[in-house]
Image (tube, rainbow, N blue to C red; front, side):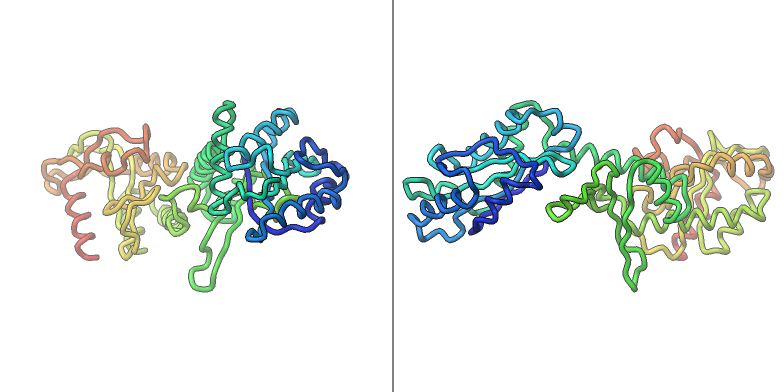
Length: 381
C-alpha cells in the first residue's frame, strides 16, 4: 500500500484540489468543519492554526493508495477506516480538523487527507519529526490488524517475481536488447541507464500492470536492480552475456572438447570441466557442466551467478547448455591412462555453487589434471 505524509503550510487550492479530482472526488469524512466549500474550510482551518503561531507548517497532507488488485476490492468505508486509524496512531484526535476524499480518476483508487495539526484548543498534536516514516508504519500496522498486505509485503512479492523472470530471461537471451524483449513478453518493462565511462550502468524494472501515468509525479513505479537483489549487479549481467558470446563463438569451429577449450582459452577464458560421476581414464566421461571465467576478470566477489575462484557455471547462465554438452559428449575423445592419474573430487564445486543451481547439479568428480590446470590459471592471474 503506497502512502505519503508531509507537513506544510497550505492555501485554499489544496482543499479545492482535494474536493475535485477532475470531478470524481468523493468526500468521505470531515471533522470540526462547518463549510461545504474548499475555500470556506481553508479559512476555518487557518483561523484555528493561528492559535499556535509557533507552528508554521500547520497542515498535514498525504494519501494512501492500494494496488489496483486490492484497492478495488475495498469499500469506501473500509478505505476510510484504514486512513482514520492510521492518522490516529500519529496523533490526530477528535479535536483536529480534517477532510478526507477518495479519488478515482487514476488507475489506483486512493484517499487524500488534509489535517490541521493544531487542534481546536491550540495544541499541536501531530509531530513533524520523521512524519513520512511514522505514517507509513502506522498504515502497515492497521493493514496487519485487518489482514491486508502491506506495501512492504507487496513489494517483496513483486521483487521476487521480477528477479525470477529476470534470471530466466538472462539464461535464455544473449544481450540487453533481447533481454528487454523477453521481459516485455513476461509483463515487465526494463529501463536501462548508461554513462560515458561504463556504458550500461543501471537497470529499473517496472510491472506493466503497475504503470500509472497520472501518478508518476507522486511515486515512480518499479524498482532499481539494487532494490530487487543485492547480489545481481549490472556488471555481472554484462559478464554473463560476454561469456555466452565467447562460448557461442568458440563452439562454431569446435567439434570436440579439446578444440572448444582451446578456442575459449585463446579468447582469455579459463575452462574447467565438471564430469558426471567419477572420472575414469581410458574411456569417455560424460560432461555435466562447464565452468568458465575470464582470466583477467576484476570480479572478485560472489554474485548471483558468479562464484569466486570458479567463475560461471554454463548450466546456470545458459538454457541451451544441453545442446552444447550433447555435441561435446558425442565427440569427446577417450582420455589416455598415462595422461591422467587417479581421479580426485572436484574442489567442492557443489558447495561453491550453493543454492544457485538447485537441482541442476549432482555430486560429481573431475580428473586431477583438471584441478592442476585450474590452479595454474589462478596463479598466472
